[in-house]
Amino acid sequence: MSSLYQKIRSVPFDVLWRTALVRLPRAVPLSTLKWTSPEGPHPFIFHMPSRSTEYTIPLHIFIATSLYDNPPAKGAPVLVDFHGGGFYLGSCLEQAPFCAYMARELDSIVISVDYRMGPFHRFPAAIEDGEDVLSAILDTDFPGYEPLRQAIVARIQSERAKIARKGEAAVNKQHKDELQHGKIEQISIPAPSASSTTSPSAKTHDTSFDFDSSKVAISGFSSGGNLALNLALHIKPPELETEWPSRFAQNYPAPIPLLLFYPSFDLRQLPSERSRPQHMGLPSAFWTQVADSLALTYAERNETSHPRVSPGLASLESLDPAARMFLVLCELDTLAEQSKAWVAKVQAHERTEHLVVEDIANMKHGWTQMPDGWLSEEEKQAKEVVFAKATAFVEWAWNGSKEADKPEPEVVVPQKDTGKAEIAKIQP
Image (cartoon, rainbow, N blue to C red; front, side, top):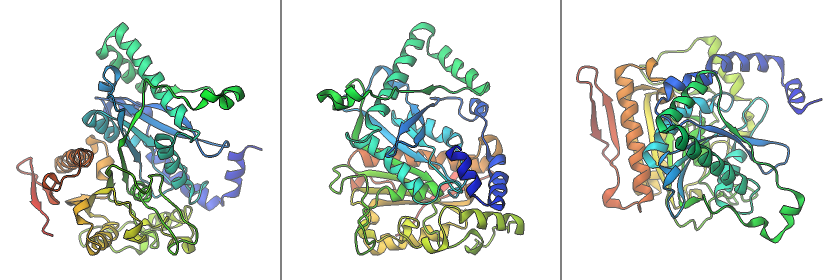
């Protein structure tokens, strides 16, 4: 009996049908990327070795075309991204426009993580997958370290060869046509033989590509923001009985940009128990019940006070000193109150020099990940402004985090009549 079948059999039927109910409408066909992310770069999929031999972690990897012929001498910058969905739904494909944009703007690699979710995988599976991807970037001893680099080298070499034969425009069109037909390149790296893993040269990796370990950023949307903050926490006793460190070394020598889009920092409240903004409508009782029941497939109520389940509860002493936080709040969001409570904690611990808050008026939770065709002009304005500010923040952090150059916290108010967004600074 397969492990997947066993997992399905172990989940109550009422949870299964609710999971199918919410996942199917949000399933993103590959063909939609031709329209939602036309500029590219288009991703390839790599199943990265994890800490366990029983499963791999699917990654959607975006490579800036500027890296094909001019890889930086110090290695490529990298952004690791986590989709939202309450830990029970969501897709890397809905992240594609953002990931492609960041790859282009930062001349970087962007890795979107298809982490394990409820109801089949409970806490801490999602966090472990995020940790493993970070380990594959930073830790030479991790099983995924070498294969991840080999996969990227294989993609770059393949794209170079195609461009040499056909030209860049023709290759980009080919990728769009493949997406329209539901195809996306998957790169497989053969497992090392027993002899190669024991030879003295086993730790030697292909020097034609590497990451710049001083330019690693993390982004996350909603529940993905929970994971992004998690990766920058070093939690020690007495906060936990056993130390749970970050995969970033505690003396990590470079700033760590965290892009936190309307994150879920406190899972102690079910969706129905959160306070609602004044002008936000009420969902139906049916969908409220569905959301509440599925929220518990990630962590039980008695686990939600754990600082890894609810990272907003973790002490500020556990937050890596190198962390630089870019926090996006939207007005019509039941999670905004959690972020505001966390901001107050950051202020109380005098870490505001490392924090920029963007407060977006009239926007609803998740609007940045909706296709542009579904958005009003005001929503598209706000999305463009926020993504541009996120890019500027990462560049600021990677370039030394100088206080004089720090982006200002702002309130963004999209305007229907002028076609431009009004921006006002947030007073400290």
